Image 1 (cartoon, helix red, strand yellow):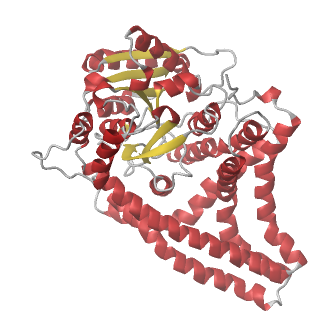
Image 2 (cartoon, helix red, strand yellow; image 1 turned 90 degrees about the vertical axis):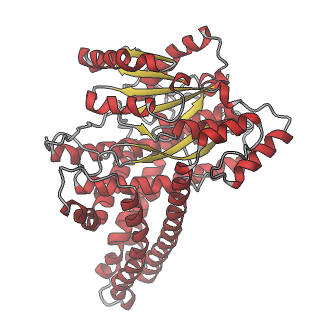
Image 3 (cartoon, helix red, strand yellow; image 1 turned 120 degrees about the vertical axis):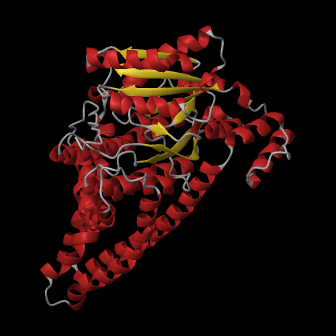
Length: 535
């Protein structure tokens, strides 16, 4: 059995610690570089800053184009009749008597299945496990998630509902999930609330330990029912995650056209719009930016990773011993666990169907501001995977092509460094050279050059604004028309939110890694719900 576990904190060697220090050291070096170059040679500093800006703007233009393309594909997939496509996938022929939209790739998939000697999974035999992780969320948060699974266009008698809850959530949580199972459980193939005991030795407090315990428990039911684990797809959901009604049927289709689904993870599009009208303006900007980036990633499969709600076959989870119980980033880390478990034979397939999630909203405005930083701090802790990938990829025996491994490692490294340094470099570096060389023409005109380039780059923000309004749910009646105006005006906060949240959270996480001050538990984001009374 391949060792895919991330080492405990007290087991990390000096070499491992060096690679934990590396991303933070590189990020701080890049932030200091304009200052260093300005002190040495102002012309070099100017060329570096302008060059970085132009590269970033060019990449941003690509992101904007991908965002629009991804949104178009996502809307197309939401309108497809996936259940009819599944019937035709099962029979092997297109039913010409039924007039529905059939994309060209559907006929290609049918032809491929007819010609291939591979045994594909049959749609009629697929069982889904919807695993909802909860800590202390209220009924107002959790019940709509259960209903979104129940009310999907997929037969609920082929869905197993698992509510994975924490003992440390207290008796009120146990009462809540028991009530939900009693109320809705009979409508599913099977339903179970599974309590994760507190203080299990060797486990970090977090979602990974919770859903892993639940996974091992539900495995017993699957064995007793003699169901093939390759016919079971497990989707993990947070308490506020509401899958689009066509998610399970679309996932089934993609799963059944995979020649080797055990080596694939399936990633829907996280869309943060559940409570977007209720969240404060800074949180709306962050949420929409995250939505746009998730849409972009669907068209960049080389960058796609398990994130938030994601799906794998039960067989894959058995092979990887479920999720990690040693890290707070169990979703992204699961990609790398699977990658090394199968010696590099692992991909992530996009599911162009949204899973609707909450923007950050706590009980008070100041708690909301803090909660947003905590959420991003947890996401940026994914920088801890850099040392893990280097250690497992280059210092443990494997047959992964090193060129392939280097490409993935460099993309991982670059993404975390860019996450940390891009906003402050773009906003402030243009003013550094003139501080050291006030007589230099290049240093004097640099802020003006940067300002003009940034003005051009703002055109790309229209793509984000477009997607923002196209993904908005209907405005609640409790808000007046001027709320829509604020949805436009909020974008003046983008420089502030990217600096105060995204960049700061990334630098915070990487700096903690540098000094070995590990984040020892999964800080659950508080989830508040505003009622029609605006309470």
